[in-house]
Length: 133
Image (cartoon, rainbow, N blue to C red; front, side, top):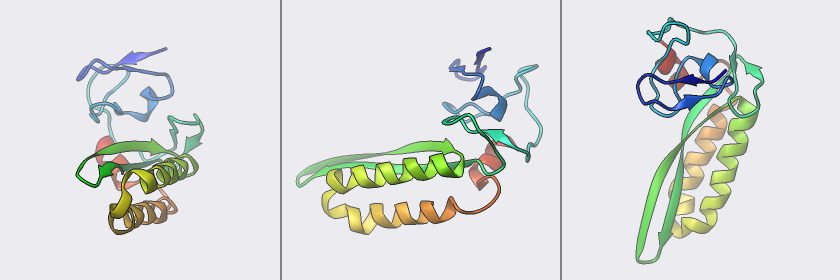
């Protein structure tokens, strides 16, 4: 059964709602009463593959579009189990090879490598803890 976030109104799927926070506005939610949910350090469902994991990762991944004269960039918030988050990190890292041009080896590559290394740590990422506590 789908749930609506009381803060931003986005509809959360049955896979997303049990995680305890809205992926759109990043606010905590309590599916039963609409109030704040207490701490949750146990397994959470991965919103990408629906598998339960005790190492949910939540990272910002850069997306750069830069051509010699002008450019734009944004941060994409990606969340998932270690396997799914690695796929997302690598995908955006590879896309940025073409779109970031000269910035790729100086900004995108280090950012990608740091996020990949962080994805191998055990437990939920600190961003997930901040959202849930």
